[in-house]
Every structure is written in structure tokens, then in C-alpha cells.
Amino acid sequence: MNTFMLLTHSWKGRKIIAIAILSNMEFSPRIRELVLSVIRNNTKFSSRWAYRLQSVIDELVNNAIEHGSDGHSLVIISLFLDPIDGSLEVTITDAGMGMKKTTAEVLTKKMYENYELMKENPLINTTIRGRGLAQIVINWTDTFEIQDNVDGKWGLTVKVVKNLTPDCQEVKKTSEELAPSLADIGIEVSII
View 1: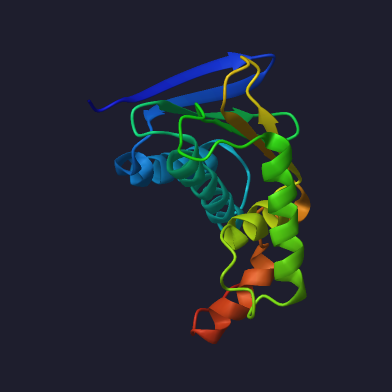
View 2: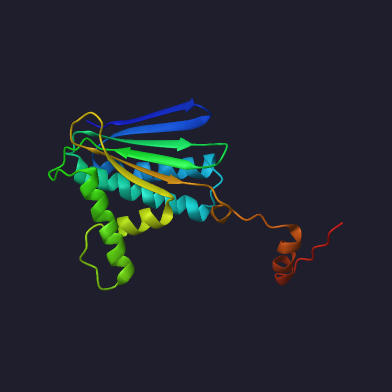
């Protein structure tokens, strides 16, 4: 059974894009491309940050599929785009049907432990599972939270937020700034 469902909606001025996928790695490339397209076409994040955020979401989705699902349950990815402040909020929810059950508290502690170990010496600590996930999620987002699903069953929801700050936006160059590079290739620029 192939399951891939997309829903878009606006609520309180925010655009919401929800994607439900069967917890199967076959959907990972599609999600990766869809997320990048959403970020590039609906936010003001620079290309560099769009790719970073794509990596964050890709890692979290793959983690939910690999560890929080059984291959037959759904993983739900929700993107909340705020046109006023430009922020991007993402939640990824798994059903907790994976082989290793864990809680938000245990996983959060593990993520921050991995983050600190990798900060100390990233070259020595190559045997730590989750080291890349901890690094990119914590370094490339402003908010990172893991919560137990509220329905009382197993499963986790991971929430990340990236605020749109000046360093996350494309820098628009003026014609004066572009002129030297054009002159370097033999094109004369004059400002009228």
C-alpha cells in the first residue's frame, strides 16, 4: 500500500502544510524535495538556509521512520509558515510502533548529550549514533522540543522552529555592488 497524503490550510494567518506518509523510506526522497520546494517558494529563507532546513527535516523524518515506526504506521509532517514574522515551524509525529520504545525525556537527554560530546571532539566520537542529527537540529534551529504524544500511546512529536533573521535571508545586491563583478568580466555598467 502506497500512502502519501498532502493537505494545505490557513489558520490564524499561518499557512499549514500537513503531509502524512506511510512509514517507509521509499517516501523520503519525495518528502525531501517537497519540503525544499515549500521552503523556497513560500518563505524568505536564503537558498543556503532552505537546504539546511531541508536537511533538518529530512533527518527528523528519517529518524521517525527508522526508530518510531513499524513500516505500516503513519508519520505526519506539518509545516507552519508565518507570513508576518517569516518563521517556519515543523512538527514530525510518529506512532511509536518501532522496536525501541522511548520517551521524550530520554530522547531529549540523549540528543543534548550527543551534542555536547560532539562539541568536545567531533573527530573522536564517530561511534555515537545520532551525532549528526543532534548537531544539525540544535545548530540550525531556534527551538527544538520533543514531546510524548498526547493520546497516551507510544510515539513522539518533534517540534523545531527557525525564525527568519537577517542572516537567514538572501542578501540583495545593489547595482553598485554588482558593478565591479560585471566589470571584471568586461561588461561596462553605468548608473543613470
